[in-house]
Length: 81
Image (tube, rainbow, N blue to C red):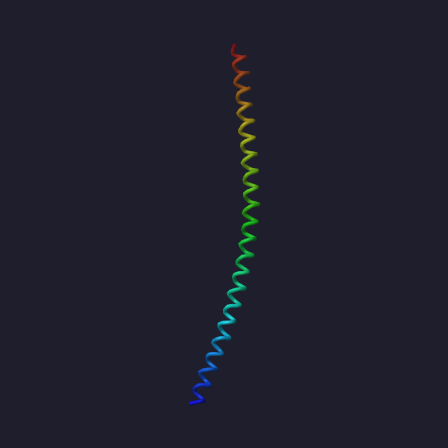
């Protein structure tokens, strides 16, 4: 009977060790995930800044092109007169 209880206690202690190991692995995994998310967030912010800059540049070019087209229309009208 004592032998069976010792085996049960030994099994419980082994399970406690395994649970403790798993808790440590989960904690490490969560920390790694948090670091990965920070890296992703930093990259996304940088990409958003580039896209905003690209949009500004595109809007500027469109505006300049519209001004040039209006000037060409004025010149054409003068020449037609």
